[in-house]
Image (cartoon, rainbow, N blue to C red; front, side, top):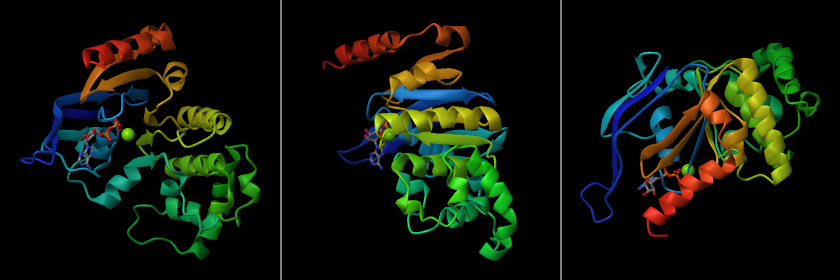
Length: 257
Ligand SMILES: Nc1ncnc2c1ncn2[C@@H]1O[C@H](COP(=O)(O)OP(=O)(O)O)[C@@H](O)[C@H]1O
Ligand SMILES: [Mg+2]
């Protein structure tokens, strides 16, 4: 279980740019949940993921994963517990390295003494089995530079790299937003498959309402550092895009837009 309890986060404290984002923010995610996170720009989605991953210090509160505090945990330890895919494919894969080298780095993520590439040759079968999950033929292109792959292929590779050591938690931050609609759908289908087959608790921030409606076991909507909608199970199944849009519109009117 992932637990964010009583989180406080203020940016630029004490300056005219001071921005209180989270004030007593709490959220609990059960193991095995696949949560779609939607919300307006600046509502705190990315900051929430940064807080969970330990990339953003907090002013107060606690983040625990299965009871173990994540804030304060050594980076290398956290790195093996949390997989992450960003919007930009170059954040998740190194373009000048081959698929093989990229996977080798992901495989050794968070290990204090990384194995040499030579030793990693033994991992070839494992890497191929992982790439086969994508159905893109990348398992036959281990020596291809990641930079020469299409955006969709690179995000698919980034997904495999983020999940190959089966983290306890997968954080996706608009990981399809930079792709054309067709590649975006392909990566979304793969995401669902990987999350389901590997049974990884997942938080997926998405700009695409349709993805939040069609995928995942739970959907939350954020606004101004708060969760303003939280649905799962039957309630989620019964929600349409229009239901989410209605809440968006209500917020816009409230904000005077
Ligand atoms: N590094 C930062 N420095 C200052 N303010 C920030 C920073 N990161 C985020 N913020 C503030 O927090 C708000 C929420 O940002 P973010 O979490 O990126 O929103 P979202 O991902 O939902 O679009 C922003 O509107 C901004 O005011
Ligand atoms: Mg964001």
